[in-house]
Amino acid sequence: MAAGQLDRFSEYDTVQNRIVCFLLTFLLLLVFSGSLTGQDAQTINDVIQQQVGKAKLYMQFDGKEIHEAEQWHDEFHSKINHLLGSTYPPQRWETVMVSGKKLEDHTRYEILLKAKNVPDLPLYLLIPSDGVSRGRPAVVAIHGHGEYGHHSVAGRHDMQGVSEAIEKANYDYGLQFVRRGYVVVCPCLIPFGDRVDAAKYGSDPCAVTFVRMMAAGRVPLAENVRDIRWAVSFLQSRSEVDPKKIGCAGLSYGGRMTMMATALDDRIQVAAISGALNLLQERTSLRYSCGLQIIPGLLKYGDYSEIGSLIAPRPVVWEMGDEDQLIVKNGWDEKFKNRLERIYAAYEKPDNLHYDHFQGGHRWNGEVAFPLFDQVLKD
Image (cartoon, rainbow, N blue to C red):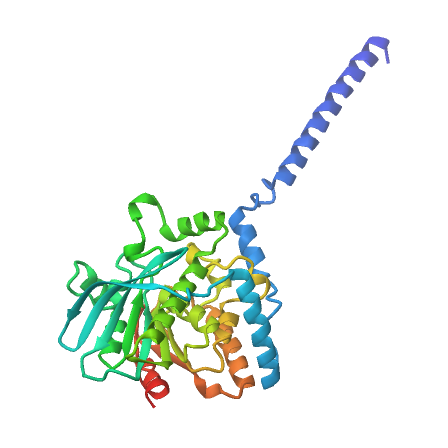
């Protein structure tokens, strides 16, 4: 081969090698970027769902004996208190009467509780008008999401828009309880009703409240537990109430907070938890996860089922409509129930665990709850 031809061949070979190297590099970049494998980069949603789904829940109860249940209760109760921070209610407070109205079958008082270094707590006090002045059973009736807060639960049909909210969810269970002879207190939780200026949020008050309070080192859920426990203390201070006969009931977020308060306060003798038979592991897999129901670090140790198990061995009913769109029936509810049943079996009190699976949607039912409360608090 002539020298000129050899030089041209060498030049051609060098160019060809560069092209091959470029193509190989390009192909490797495509592979590693996922373009050829059909896999896009993981989003934060993907990562969180994987982490939540693999949560170990290290403190789940797996015992069978009463002493094991009691030991677990003490340990997990202590852990929840550590995660939440203090939920103790004020020991001293001022009761400010805002208004009072005598209705056909009960008297409704609008009250503001005030204590040092604690936000004011608005609540309704409902007292039956049948002449019995002492020793009554009492109920804390807790509202869920919605712009009317505690007004709906207390049955404020005289307020614009409240009747529609009540009709939609059978929401006036506080009114229903007082008509059954109970003294009822309906506290207003944050950030709802009288305790929120929605115009200053610009977006979801639950999520924004969680972020802002966490920045100050506080957990919204703990603040609401404290206020419910404050409502219990308020009931115990009333001469009309038997301080040993107090129950708690709520729908939706009110159901979640009924679960929380009853788990942490043994002054509550019986509970009705409606529309909340779901796990945090489930809720964080959905499009919307309510910031007011988040306990930082919970899934390392347990889930809502473990908190609900702290109610044992006291009587409780869990309500769930078969058309409730907020509870995904994909096995999460069965896991929840299995964990509840394990602790009640260990306490040898399986008959204290009740379910009310009714036909309907996300609403209060009461078919099992009302007779159960009568049995526990009136006998």
